[in-house]
Length: 215
Image 1 (cartoon, rainbow, N blue to C red):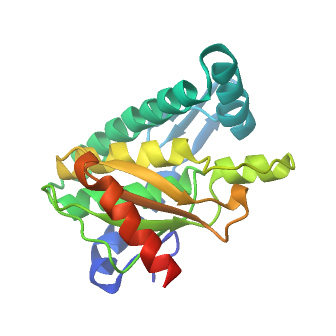
Image 2 (tube, rainbow, N blue to C red; image 1 turned 120 degrees about the horizontal axis):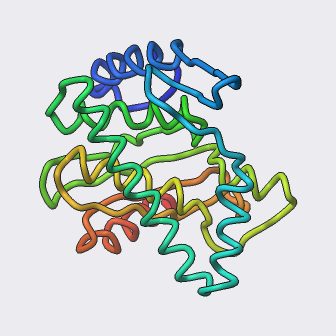
């Protein structure tokens, strides 16, 4: 039974394999403050406070360049991190199928403290322009950071999480995709909800997801 991700039944077997793999990596967590290192599965990690990574960095960027440019920069930074992590996990696991490459992503996302992922039943991951993901995060680090500060936003704010996921899937499926948050806990919504698709279809997919939510 999956513990760190929720997916449609057809995907469960592949995600169970990914969960076992990632759980083993994180069971090998090694903290060596005497050497200033943290390692997971032998690879070096860096622990960063969420408020520093998200809120303080974003506000500093926004003050210098404006909010739109700050969002775009941080989204694209996270996207490249996700792309790199996907390539690394796929190589270490020796997998090439798109869904298998995807499967490590949400599990690693949960173990690394970004958020829990629930893939919805209308997902259609594919290695072409028909690619489509629709998913929830009930507790992104961005929305929790804002809530802990008593902050309420007018528009979705989880652009780190969106960018990372889009980067991971772009690498996993070898098709360039982008993610857009359409509902956000920090805005007062029940959960953070995202749609991911190629740029040429993203607006259409967002309309479809919004219509489904309103039905």
